[in-house]
Image (cartoon, rainbow, N blue to C red; front, side, top):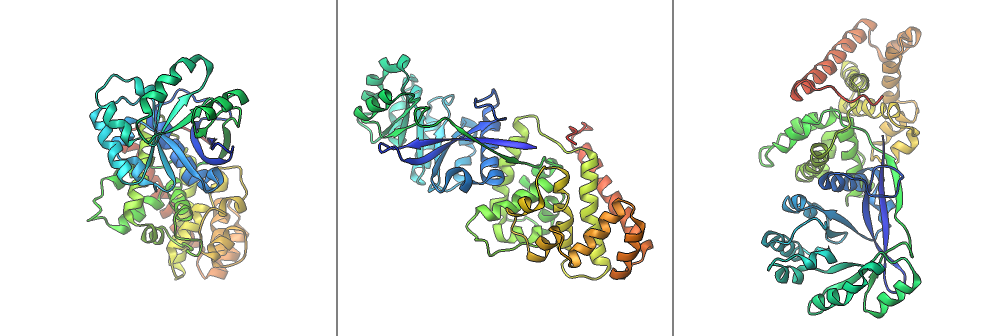
Length: 422
């Protein structure tokens, strides 16, 4: 399925882009749709970090994301570096002593906090304690609000708060804002939000998110964690993309989910699973059809089992190759485009592009089984030194294994049907 994020540039007084505000969009329509605030933020984070990619969106500059009161209480901003993220507090968040405490802690960690001018008019005594924690205040510069400018500027003058003029739509408004001491600017005079899009793969087993979250960091079983992740193509792909967005560099090539876990660390994975769970629980989650799930997991398991049968090293790599090979069933992209964001071991990468090696031979055999190409099955079985009888036995076992996974997920959701996407 296609996913979207809008980015609106933030300019300084020299009209240079110094950052971006990242905004939720459900399609190419450049308006914010009615949607739960938690879900909107989770969607922006997931699509920005794991689907589209921060480098493409922000070009190395700082970015701001809106956070609801609930997500602030969950400390979600602290999952990301203060060198990159500016915390924009949603205008719906009410001033409270709790908000002051949250903002103070974020400031101490090095985060820049942005609030809307509307917050200044909340009648709560904690406003005087909140303002020292704030780095910027966004002021609506449209004419209909011009009568409030002097009052807003007076209320913030005694604090080290930088003024940020939004809704700048004319050269005259830009000139006035500069003359009044504003240092950051945003609006259609400079640029409307630019929408970027890419693909996302719907979740297969959302119940696995809850299982992972329930695991204690001290007692977590890495093998159990890997098993949960590799059963879900969506989660597996996001985990691999996370390696490319982290500070590990491109030299780390992965041949299994377990290797990815060892590289990232279970604490980072649990944090991201929490974000994914927020998206799932806040809105109507997308689901793959049983047919797609049956295809991808059976193919992956069959690849792994064939690898074990013929005694190859690292059978988990064959599982990964089989799983990733199914992405083309779900998205309208070439395999070259899919693989450019995934830090895969070279021989797995080559096999997925069709180059001849042991991974490619096993993939060819599995695809021949799926399409009942009997001559090709016979030929590849001889090359791999596996009997057709053994092949179809393990194919049946792999298919039954997948069917059991699907049954367990339906049971976890009290028998609710999946949403058919394909």
